[in-house]
Image 1 (cartoon, protein in one colour):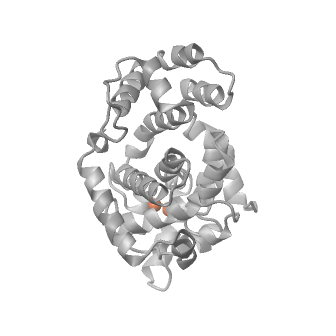
Image 2: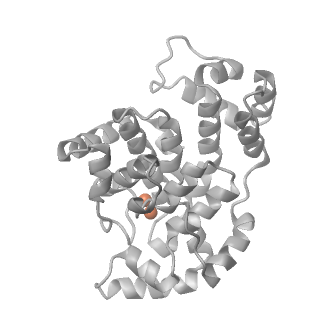
Length: 285
Ligand SMILES: [Fe+2]
Ligand SMILES: [Fe+2]
């Protein structure tokens, strides 16, 4: 992964920990689930410290999406059924989603719009992962959820500069992303990748956040970045959570070719994503 070298970028990276510190519980969960020798009771005792997390995990484990035949009543049963990796991703998603609910003025995203967009991209990315038989759809879901985390960072730390981005965009000669890159020297994906790195997430996730608008720049083995890229454009077509940059991103042909996604697959993805969102009470949480 090539590194950005830019004064503003480095200044913002230095402040990230103040803006988006990772809750201690989730840090422990990441460490425990990474270690294959972790005993079930160790993980359960950490999860149990956070009652809000426990109820969210139980609700998710019992959601129609997982389709377990018996009702799951205890957190240890949920961990056994879902597996460590899913528990990590679900716990992470549950603990970070409140962050996305604020308005993001620099992108003209009203309160809740970034969350709706991110959540829809997560759902659509997971549908693509399943369609293409990707081995870890929950990881792709998490990437979808976090892909635009950099927007929140830039809204906090580059407000002044963003007035120039908006001005340049309004001249009508550039896409919003091009205006962002021209004025700042980097884009929200690149700063978002630094957040994912600080949170100790996987290399694949970090790279996918970084290149979600330029998937051709990611390493050859990274398929998740193409899934999230396609999902981002599909959700844009659906008109969910649009701001200044809505309807401004083009589908990269290399992504659809690589994953063998046809035009009719895109149409189906719109329908299936809409269906899943309609059935999902989590959209409101
Ligand atoms: Fe983005
Ligand atoms: Fe996005």
